[in-house]
Length: 259
Image (cartoon, rainbow, N blue to C red; front, side, top):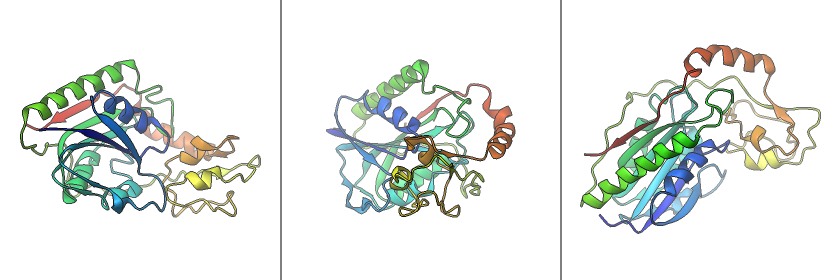
């Protein structure tokens, strides 16, 4: 099949999913545009893609699921038998139903998911787990995956849907009780409110956070210019203890390609 361009589509609150997506997209010899799925209020229904566009769609795994804002944005897009490579970036723990949920969401709106990658990255909350990933070894593996996917696309006339791990119905969503709050050093500059993908932070009073809307994505902590947003240290310690056993060993990346 003939590919003429790439769309690098990602939801990446702390930057590690985008780093993975950018590395993968850079391996394909086509013009590439980026689409950020985290912009609150953006009209994603304006995006329609044809058969000649390869969409690389990357999301982090939040508790083994696709983050809600990413699902909402993707469900508004339209494909026309558009080939897609799906990527689940998981914080050195597990991705569980993320790839399957992402695949089903995209194929419902007209995409054909031809390949899938589970990429281990630095954990977005407990950064010591998977620290520095994707690292040099990961990026070499991503380059190898891209070469295999490109070979598949060059050999096939009609793309097939890839088989990925996961369960349907999907696992229940369990949001971590980690809502970042503003410290006394907060200047109420509003950077965090503008960046929040769910609108959980008040524009008029940025020190106020709506815990019912927060998805613990940690973007506000990542973008705060004065490092004034943080999570409760006691909850962080409890989270580290809870996931430490499964997260402490290096997790392998995985790649699935349609036959």
